[in-house]
Image (cartoon, rainbow, N blue to C red):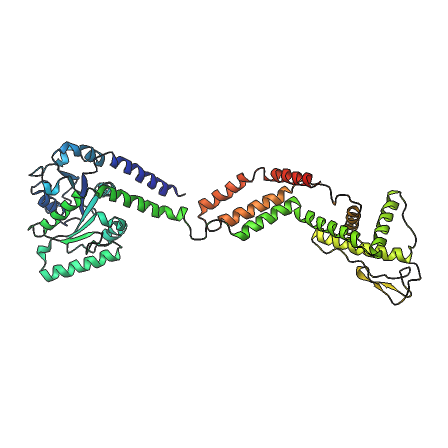
Length: 474
């Protein structure tokens, strides 16, 4: 996985643990905004005291300032230490205990668009630690691209712990203020920020004048309800986890069906059966069954065939090879044997073995009858002239006849062999590929590696199972 994303996930978990070590009934709210938006003026208006420097010099706020509303101010020391707010920057309101704002820890942040890089770094760091944010905008900069692209849009998932305040409405007429507020809502909607209207969860949008105090009371009441809910810290942590989960989603979630398809399972089983030789063994068993059925219900032709095959095998064992012509009946029996052997060879090898050729040239069975393919006889008359049946024999055809002779004699079709390890490995690779198709790259590689490790010893296990099955059938 991407190291940067993993590091961010680890940071979120660490910060969640660190925040929960401190009182969750304290709600840390930061006032953030651009230069000249009136952040410090609003901070002082909420505190009802001149606690943060406000003026025309820019930047005015060089370091964060904190104000705590609680009966026991020391309870907030741990939270402020975590935020890195020094003791000299901690203030008390005119009324230390205000039931309307009890538990509120309010911060005045430096400008997010400050010319000083250190100020911007402080803002970015604290925005990742506080429980909620009041974004202060003014009629001139409320549509600023830096604000929307760098902060509001990426933080859209934190709407439930956000306030958007249009300040300096005293500079606008009532109609103009309404128009600006409507346009601000439109921009926030474009940013993907849910607005908490009509009782729905989301960011609360307000218009006020921190200088005249118009609308400040409404914000104070909203902060009081927000703080009294005692849920801001957990909602913020939940939004953190949701955000990092969304960034990790591409690395651990993919569209597609879970698990293996039935066709993939069947193909895997077929490949393993091929590696064990079960298909060839099954065909040999079928041929043996047909042989036994032929013995039980055979005709004179099958008896002649068995007589010929056994006699030929005996002659070979004794070192006697027939060099001359066979009798007409023997030629017919050999043709039948050739056809049967070729059929067995094709079934076992999975390819077409040469058919028994027609009788040809001098010395073949001729005159009144002709031996045709598949050992059939054209019965236009009796066979009178001795001859030899010839074939375009290959090594595979000869092996097929020997296999058939062994079956007829009751011997095993082929000696037991070890399971084909390359076929087993190929089957595992194909199954792993099917299982990992469509997964994100890290998980695809993990699945294939797990399949490779899990398949160790599979060939030996199949060997043992095959041997046990053969012993049980013996």
